[in-house]
Length: 287
Image 1 (cartoon, helix red, strand yellow):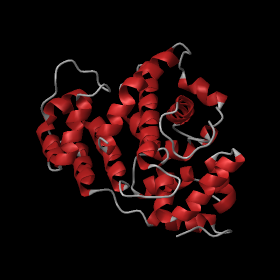
Image 2: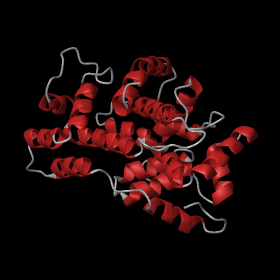
Image 3: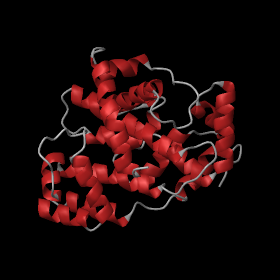
């Protein structure tokens, strides 16, 4: 339902309600991972119930993202490498990509959109890893979902979104600025509303809500800073496009929060060159 002027909150809620629930496969995997009595075998069985998901998890375990020398042949081996909660988070990312696989909207190339999102996800994960953090997959999935509000808008109001994207290009403005001027909320707020409806972790909700305005993030400021900076970096490097005509401005406080030495940037850019195409093929499907 297109938003009407003067009703931003109501229309934000209405658009969020139109999005279906997450697939049952993800819900089953999430439930098993949350069960303290579940074993690796139980989790592997939950993943194996969806052959497509199982195949992509194995591809991911053998990808440049994990840099394994020995081949991973079974889901239990993949679990041992990736970790239970991390696998659940990656299954979430795959479920969301699948949910929007048939979206068609003017001005948006679906593969280019997900290439951008996956590059942001990879960069955010690499930044967390450079700080020595262990659970980097939540950064990956938060980065993957950061622009999901664009997909929701493409599904709910494709013509209006197309007008907003064209206006952003014509005015050399950020898409979020045009969205807020036109309908009272932007894709970051819309995406966060849907993640809240899905009852996803608060870290993901806050990162999606604040990736353009990280100064407004309350609890997960560092994770939001990672995705904010990664979004800029990926736009500058030219990996895919979520419709932006310009590289968003950098919040300097967010850069400080990343805690990333400048010398690490070349290393991250090199890693992205080796990961982005492969991961896009895994999450979206080969061309």
